[in-house]
Length: 251
Image (tube, rainbow, N blue to C red; front, side, top):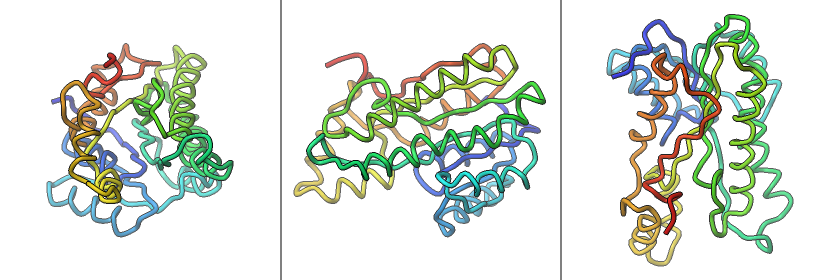
């Protein structure tokens, strides 16, 4: 397993799902992990689960869309070795079912969130000449997803942000990459499935989107994040790592 000994990592949206899996795996790999989430109970539960495995972590309640709150967090934390911008929200709807407010809401979290974190934490990485920034994009950042207009727009923006950062700050020793998962079995997805008239059929339909015929597990996305966080991926920057079960290969 790739190791993160003596490294400090921060993971946003780490109270559940992919963010929680990343925080737990990073801690097992030796990192001290800052668990960031708006949900205090969920974030602290992640910290507790890490402590139960003899890992080291602390919780911080922060709204990533609030630049002042993010800057205040950066002012009281040590310099990071790894920053994972995982926090994000979704929306279902095509053009006629999407309002400007919907798009603005997703943009504030999915795009301004990573931007705010990078503005606050990357300067210290640049000063030290090392660091890994991992932005959670999506399959929706590479191909369009039907009835996910606002989500697709913002995740394409995350991919663009990642590439621009990599280009602007190379070679500095600080790397910027994106993870692009397809369907992943997270609490958020399960909650959305429960809203369908036939949740079991909806689950099968979503799983069939991927060539593997199943959804990914959060831990499988976390493994990819660990690779990008570790020193072994030193030559990887400006990349979008697909973890989509072959979805982007075509149908």
